[in-house]
Length: 137
Image 1: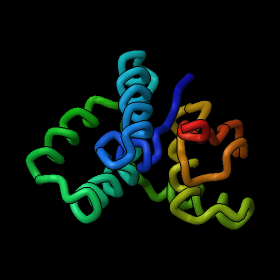
Image 2 (image 1 turned 180 degrees about the vertical axis):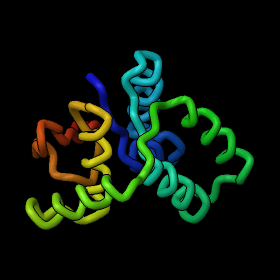
Image 3 (image 1 turned 120 degrees about the vertical axis):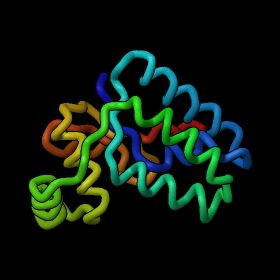
Image 4 (image 1 turned 45 degrees about the horizontal axis):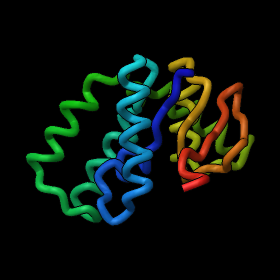
């Protein structure tokens, strides 16, 4: 099922201090990418780079390698329409604006789910289900 990956999935793939979540994240990323059903948004990629630099303290060259890998995913770019839709979702459903932007990217790209540890597991927005892939980890 087409899935948009939230930032925390990418971060956990590089988080050696969380080995179970790291293994799960890597399996998700590689499995979904291999099946051609993984989607990212430019927002997620930007947030990943910020966390990789500031929190994980990864070397820039390693981050560039990750970007090279993630470049091969279907990528949903932020646009005025996407931002407007996210604002509507924020107002109507009470999501934080940035979470709403991720959900709007999933809607735009035809995803059936968003994989995120940070959003409400089980919530459904315009046919897109939020799933916490680390719930049992």
